[in-house]
Length: 287
Length: 286
Image (tube, rainbow over all chains, first blue to last red; front, side, top):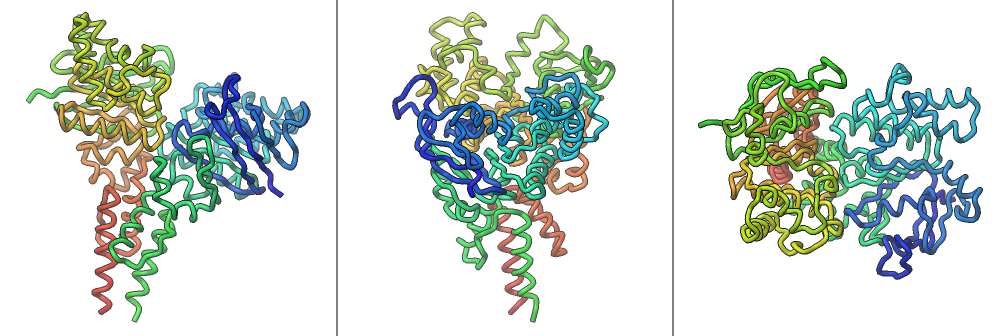
């Protein structure tokens, strides 16, 4: 069963009902449980508007949204239930830290879910471990931490709610390469080891190519394509036409092919590229 | 030749928070007019603090910075320094002051009491440099992130500075916006000989610099060309940096195939070396 299903969803900001004012229009897609979906598209393509629909921050002007089989806008209870199912990590989530200790900040969500004190403590301990921070930070003021640590605390606050669907809006922006790597690994862990559904909005093709199962491309408020990573990158010219790029390593193999080399084209990560080249070289040195 | 920016024994610590903790610790380097510098380093390494010292937003705790021969501690000449060094910040929405593009670009010359007639010419020229002339009468809020950053750059160009510091100016932009801003940096450096200092986490941008300054914990670990920086794997590890994808790929490949190490900086160089490796094997086969 699809865990996320959108049916002809449109949304216009303000009071406008006119089609040309729609930030997203006629969006329909399904995400299966446990999938890792990357959403890309240039600024203003409707990515952020779209994901704000996943946990009822925005109510569609028309269309239906089903999360975990429930029509989320049916009544107040379904809206509240939806907010527990879907954890949304905004851009620069560290700006939303507000409690005086890391522990209190992470505990804020689970506490509001009405969980027992013991359960809250357990959730906090587990969340801080998942984001790879030491539990010795729990007593600290979040504002004493580095930028990368703050962001991981903010993500821990969402993970502590144990959402079935984790939605992240450009979670690695502004971080150094090491900090970025840590965030990507947290997301991968939550998806692979906890078997949760992930929706990850990003501008980085390299990031998406590594862990996502599928890529949804937004352009001008509409879905341009929603397909596996491999099928998506095959259409490099389509990506370029909407101002997106393919991973650099894929570009290398496209150009090698152009030069007449017999190389496969489904190469989107360094790991895969290494395998491919080593294979070719080894085949040739063997008698 | 007298350097444009000359940093000597620079120390800096913030007075109110983390009292006593040095943010910058004994920096010594200089930048010549016309250079294209990239400054890289982990979050909290002191890069952005340094950016704010270049145009006297912050002043050294000890040591000195001379900009075009002027000590930034010289309060009387502080506006002279700010005219010479402009900073483009990270968030495009935080540095636009007016509602219309042309008004925003005119802000600095208006404050410098330039005549109306001259301002018109200055604004046109600045917008032309960043390829935004057709948006002259547009409202700023209708522009994309990359366009807003280019308006911010035009606002700085209106003061005709010798140096522009980009403090993670592309990090909030999409790939198109990033390329637009990067192209402007290259153009200004090439055509106007404007000194560019690009502070960034994006290693793909670093390859365009003629010199890279690597910072860690408030100190300079190394200054060198992009090629030498990206071939120094120990340095990359120590400073928490990652080489561009194609560079990392080829570094690893050469290691695993026990080939002589070749450090490439972009897709085309990578293709060239890979072609050699694959062709070499063909020859060996026959």
